[in-house]
Length: 332
View 1 (cartoon, rainbow, N blue to C red):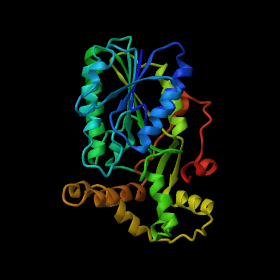
View 2 (view 1 turned 90 degrees about the horizontal axis):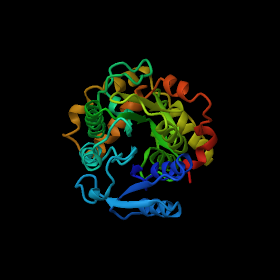
View 3 (view 1 turned 120 degrees about the vertical axis):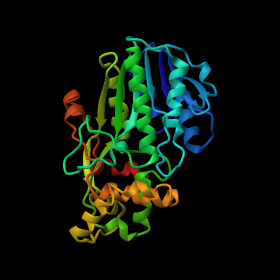
View 4 (view 1 turned 45 degrees about the horizontal axis):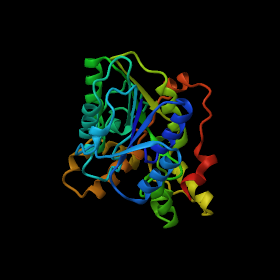
């Protein structure tokens, strides 16, 4: 028995399709949101074509969760509110608690996979070196804090009940079918608007991974449960680029001339320094304004820049999609 939450989403439909191949003749139950929008409708159509069982539910209110089977062998919790501009991210922590309570008990034969984010490291003090999986989380927005609370909750439950737990922290995920106003959707619009911001010499490295590679790794990791009671953390990433490099690729693919605007190093030093106290403004200014400033501080410094040695050692032969070769996936 396998349960996948967020199965109708950007990553979820791809994970569901690969689970069928990885675990033939296994019952797969997909928890989907009880809402209607273009992205959700498209995801439901894919799940229907895969002939997978779906259950409508709401992780925040708990509605429909009583229909989920108890004590599954594998749980992949993809359900999340990833819109960093949003004030309410209770799906990421309260929703996880409600899910766990609905499917417990879990034992050493169960594998719970919590899909998390590297955004909970946004406040790490030293961005001169890439971070590793044991880096101490320091979140600077509600999205990161909610995902951190979710991690802390499920780590504690795993230690108490001795089930297998894997946490997969995602870097910037890109590919066809992302939600509106996602990272690359915003960049594409800004380039089309000929925004000056897209030609600045942003110096900070940020990690990227294609959605197809995320799905492939999640399913591969699902068959490698960790030691019961101890969380095994992976950072899922393929490559690191500066925002300047990304913008140049988008300009060139869209047929625009790219002429970089070089701001002095002292400007970027000040911008990077602003990353630490910025959280004090979160409740004082509009969410959209704070989100823009928060994102800018991350790409002004190499904050979301990962040491990929653990994932590369675990899967040395993976053939990952690189942005330059597959840029059309985010420009459609």
